[in-house]
Amino acid sequence: MSAILDQINLADLPPQAIVETVDAAALRDAWIADLVALYPEIADAIALESEPTRKQAEVAALREAALRQRLNDAAQAMSLAHAVGADLDHLGVTYHRTARLLITPADAQAIPPVAAVWETDAAYRARCQLAPEAYTAAGTVGSYTYHALSVDPIDGEYVAGISCVLPADDDRVMITVRGSVGDGTPSAELLAAVTARLTDDYVRPLGATIEVQAAEVVAYTVTASLELEDGAGADLVLAAAQADLAAYVADARRLGQEAAPSQYITRVARSGLDAALHQPGVRRVTLTGWTDIAPTPYQSAYCTGYEVTIA
Image (cartoon, rainbow, N blue to C red):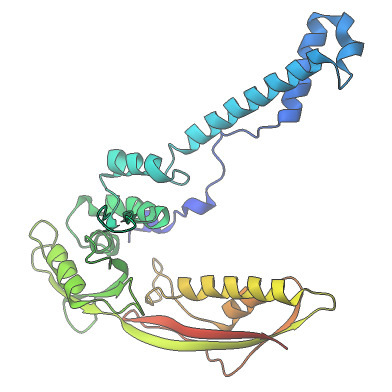
């Protein structure tokens, strides 16, 4: 990926200057102050909660707050970092020449009818951010990644992640693919589609030898016990710990990367598991039989199950 795109994390951007904090109470007070400035004689009456003029000011303030929030939403809908749904679709097509992927078509004849399943906002936003890498033929990590992630889904399966490595001992470009179904092992059909996309004459640089392979899945389990503080609600703490653990292991499925400046190392680490499990009310987390997992660029870590108990 390019150094510029590597350094841009949309989530780290500060709020847009055009977006303001909407305070209905402050707007109400401003309306009342303006009315009193125009008609000083109503100052005492409008201070009463039952005064009709005060209620009119409150209604006006609420409507102004709604309008200001609508303007905030409209401003955010024009940014890649915050746009969602149809707004993001328009940004993607207009400025990034990238359409949202259809994962599973709708089936109106099914009983009950089945709605279409589309690429998530987060995945689509990430592809839009990569789109400038595709302005030239593949060659950069970002370009290969964009083209691979843009392969049309096959029977509901799509490319969930790739790694791009140039082995030191030859001139092949090794593309490793993680699928979206099951443990991430991609189907032969999906691998063929990725190969066809990356070896297209308008994508593959002349002289480049591209090899596409399936990710090697590294399976693991997590067994943990939580020691709680006195008075902590066991059910609530356990539910929160399990939810954060599920999110952590899902994110850790990314293919491992080499330790280059423009790449990251994916690791399923004790520190990450501890952070996910150490919820408010937890005194100590104990992991049983755990060893950190550091996948290679050709591997993807997959959690086959986890057991979290209260000690």
